[in-house]
Image (cartoon, rainbow over the protein chains, first blue to last red):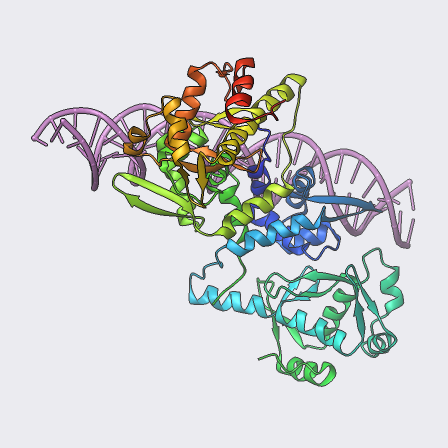
Length: 230
Length: 230
DNA sequence: CGCACACTTCGATAAGGAACGAAGCATTGT
DNA sequence: ACAATGCTTCGTTCCTTATCGAAGTGTGCG
């Protein structure tokens, strides 16, 4: 009936916390598979599927099929601009209890995003790897340098195997809390896994938050010159 | 103690057609009373009241009380910017049938907005009155010049009476379809009424659309130098 | 004072949609 | 061929919320 732009319908699409979280994860412009988006938003694959269908139907996302994976990405930069315009007038989420506040702080500091690392720590590690020229970045992906290949070998990360996997190899994922990209994709997952194996980070029960241990803090300082973590 | 911006909550606020319509009516930055906003959105005063309370609570609008009227306006220009960012990615009207398409075109061309005139014709008349220096505009309101006072007298519009009414006298109302302001408030209503009385425009049954008659087209050309209407 | 008006609050109703379990489809790997 | 994986569709449950009638608060006017 209305000939005017149907602002309400788009806003309604973004107005669900789950869908807003998915869009936030895609803000960097990369493509992410449905499963990864489901994990980011902390919901079941079925629910994620219906949300993603709505976002595609509403013209906010596009989907490309690759094998049995379906990759979603923002349809246009304008979608990201709209999200950010909303963020500018959005209230900062209110903190109810001291307990919730502590949990929010922990989550902001270090958490898993699917199977890689996000939060202050995730961003710091990514930035350090760029500073040390282990990685170089372009808009869509990270590239591993010669130095980076050596570094990965030293950590027991088999880049050849990672490249063979169906997943994207090393994509940036824009961090909610930090507004900076962090390392995602197969390489991001492998790095996180090694950090767990070495005991530098440990999972916190019933939460996506992870805890940076004392050896971890020391190790990151020594190996990646990261001094800024608390 | 800030956490992530709660984008979903704002988007949810804008994501109701009624509230989106209210925001659209306020895009120009002027203040409008609750009743006028209810009429714009075509809902009852009770419903409007609950919606306005939510918009104020969500930080999108501010309210000032004047006598028994309550005037609402956008809390900040950023709110308008967010609305427009959404409009940029919003679908234009999905046109199902030829009939619906014709109706949409008619609505875009000329329609009532509350009791004044919107659409291409509404914007053209407002622009013509500015061109002929019958009106001058500032950000919040229109002012009637000496020439404008004479012109109104010639049309049988009693400005003194209009100014006495509790309504805003002459406010700009941003047009959804044209993205230009048109004349609203008591004067806008009076002008529309006179156009109806002269038979220059006639109502189309069961629609907000109005039809510009042949005498109307000729009259607007003669009296206001409007030549651009079809 | 009494009445009209502008707006809000309360209560009940009805519609919409978000969530997940179960099952289905397609692709990949053995 | 069979199983595992990634994702979607279907059906059900449950909660949220938009809406309006009725009643209440406060203002202005004669």
